[in-house]
Length: 84
Length: 408
Image (cartoon, rainbow over all chains, first blue to last red; front, side, top):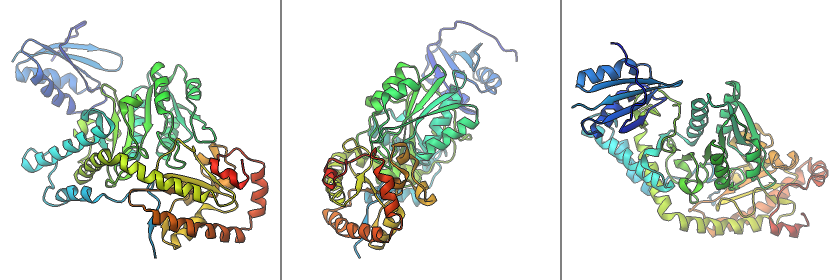
């Protein structure tokens, strides 16, 4: 799976789980996606490397759109668009 | 023999109503809160109910309360968790010399890990000067921690002012409110703190439960990694009965606080004025801004531990300062930092009162304590030397009524 890098994405909801480990990234992802309307964008901030594989994988499995990541010095910002 | 417990700052007895709500979780409601079937869900609901009760006591959101095993864990979590989370912004931390060992030793750990720590002095009343905090802040400062109320001398620190200074400088502020939470009003919004530690057994809850308030949006590095308990910030299967008990104790503390405070304050004032009637005894800590049930003294010419043992032989349980210094038989660093001479600091004795204490308890103490002091002074080989030493040092605190004894 190749990672897409994006910039200046405007999220509708943001969740900060920096310093939290597996499986918080997947639990928060599911929890927050339930709050979103179709077409809205979720931003997840995490420094957990496993998320690089897991979040795109989760999107593929659930049929949601993985928009890409924005990397900062300390953590990643993941952008996911709710499709279903 | 009459039994009087005067060591509420060490721990409190369990409130009977707290025990009642805990019992089912020690028996039939034994589920793991993470289990998806009913037994687990009931344990989960009990924890979330306790979280709401605890957050209500400190006026926070339930999601801002992370349960821990103790106040010491909450203090370690705050110091290490924030320092590590912010180390890219700077590696300087400020703590006061009035802190408990769970702050001081965590600060020493940070020093070993490459941080610089400034230890702020206190004045003769054990009060940390907000101005001193301001002066200690440098560009690299990421965290300040000052105790809300000292368990050793009872002084209540100017947390609101210090928190304001921290906020103005963009520095995170933590307060160790273990001795104060549940005993006096503690409102995280009013105080303006980012983090606050508390412990259940300081307000008639069980041991084995504490909590750290972490302001919403604040990043903190976990102390314990593992599962998803406490939102992934504190792993480990929850101590469900203790957490349930802490919640109930918090609810009761909030409801009964005013009455409890008035009760212990009245008894404490009687105790203080009675004990200060003994010659060469000084109140330590602040005369007015102190915990309502807290009376601490320095007794000249004798040593705290010997008073403690003789009082215990009369059925009265007290402390001679912090557990560490009494075990190590050395003068308390807190008292020394307040400018109390080490000879006088040896004679530290701490009475802390609770809702179970009565006027008869105070009468019994005031009858038995003066002869104990007299007897110990008679056999003290140090009396003369200590007297000479103490005469050159008048910087310790006094209670207004002690002027009768001819001291400052």
